[in-house]
Length: 223
Image 1: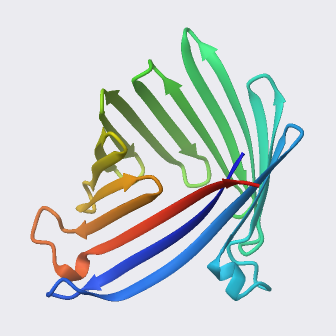
Image 2: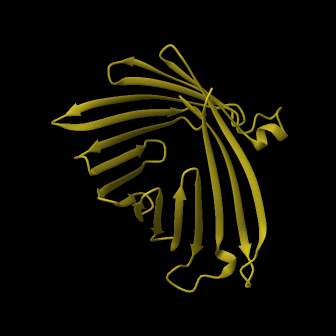
């Protein structure tokens, strides 16, 4: 069971000469340990270390299978004083893998239903509904060789999101575009590094100040 340590370096507020005026470095870690058939996860961030009494970013979670294809999880965020419980059911329906997940968040008394349907080995459909905000969303993802394309739509905000990526050996490059916000991103990844560039007003003339970039390095290890 792999644990992870993540370091993120972000750049914002680029000047007209292409030099960012704001930068930040953050760290996060998730330590996982399997005890019998239960998996315990302890997560924290650099904010947790700076102000340990506030519990910012500190999350303790446990996941346990209950029956064949059924598992439960419970997580508590100490900084946000919020607990999240979920039940996940995986079944084979008419030859397709179907996953149904029920999520309850104590903060705000939020109940969410999620469903994933693997139509075939190359196509996946996802849907979700938030009963508190009455917000529905759906997406479809299709893979063809090294290419993967997806389209997502939030019905409450009438917000489409398009993405495409291509894998070439150890490298993956891709782009996303949020139609309503006119926000685009391009990214490149090769384990353990991922770099992302984000721009606003991409169909017009993006200003340097609207650009932001991030570099994330992830290290996986076993306890």
